[in-house]
Image (cartoon, rainbow, N blue to C red):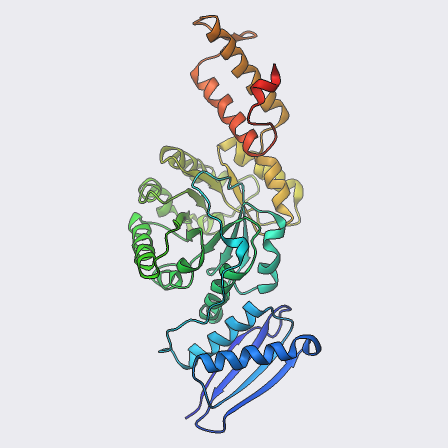
Length: 403
C-alpha cells in the first residue's frame, strides 16, 4: 500500500510544497513546478535525487510546487515528507554549518531586543539577522500551527546551521513539555545558543529541559553551552518565579508573557499595564536576586510607535533590561529606549569623577552639589556607565579622555 505525505507551504514566498507518494514499483517520478525553474530547476532536481538516494527510496512519485525556496528550505521540506512516510529512518540529511555561525555568546551579553520569528516562515528567517536584534527567536510554539510543528522542526534545524544571523544570539522557543523535549533533538546539536521555555510554572520543568540538553550534548559531543530563558505566563508561574530562576546556572534571563498572564488572571491587557504591575515587578526583583537579566514582554501593537516608546520607558523604569519584539521596526526603538540617556551618562560621570577625586584627597564625605554620594548612588552610576560602554555610547577608557 502506498504511503503519502506532504510538507511545506503553498502560500508563502521563499518556500515550497512537497507531496511524496511511496509506491511499490515504477521507479522515481518527479513533477516539478518552480517560479525559478529557468535558473535553478536543475539544482532543485539534483537535490531531490540526492535526498531520495540518501534515504534509499527507489519507487516514489514526488510533486514539488516551489516559490523560490532556498536550498535549506527545500531540503527541510523533502526530509520532513520522507520521515513522515518512514519514521524509522533516523539519519539526518545535513549540510555544513555556515562559516559565519561559528560564534558563541556569553551569559552577560546585551539582550535588549529579541525578535520573534515564526519557525515555519522561511522568508522571515532568511533576513532576520539583517535588522541587528540582539537575539533572534525561531519560534516552534504559539506562532506555528499544530499541523505544521513536526515539519517546522526540520526547517528550524537547517536554519540554525545555514542561515547567517549576523552575530545575533540564536534562540529557539520550544513547545510546552513534553513536546518541547522532542524539539530539543532538532536544535541542541545544531548551534542554538539559548532555549526559551514557554509557560514555565515549576523549577522541575527547567531541570527536565536541562537534563535532556546534557544528554544530547554528550550524544553529539557538542561543547558549546546552551543557555536557558524561562517565560513566566501564569499566576502560578509568578508565584514560583524565584525557584524557576534559580533552577539552573545556565539560566541567563527571566521574562514574562503578558498575553497569557492577563488571560490567566482574568484581566484585559492594557497599555497602562496596571493589571500586570505586580507580576512585572516580581520578575525584575526575582531576576536581580538570581543575578540574571529581567526581560519585559512584547509590545503587540506594531503600528503604535509612541505606545512602544512609552512601554520601553516604563519597562526601563521598573528595572527591565530588554523587551521582546514581534516586528523588525520595533528593534531601533527598543535599543534606543534601553540605552542610557545623555543626561544619565553625564550625571553618572560626574558622580564617578567626584568620588575618584575625593578618594585621592582622603575625604570620607563625598557630595555632588547639595546631595551626598553614598555607595548605592555610586553603584547606579557604575551600572549606567557600564551599559553606555556596551552600547558604544562612550569609550571604555572615558576617564582618561575626560582629563
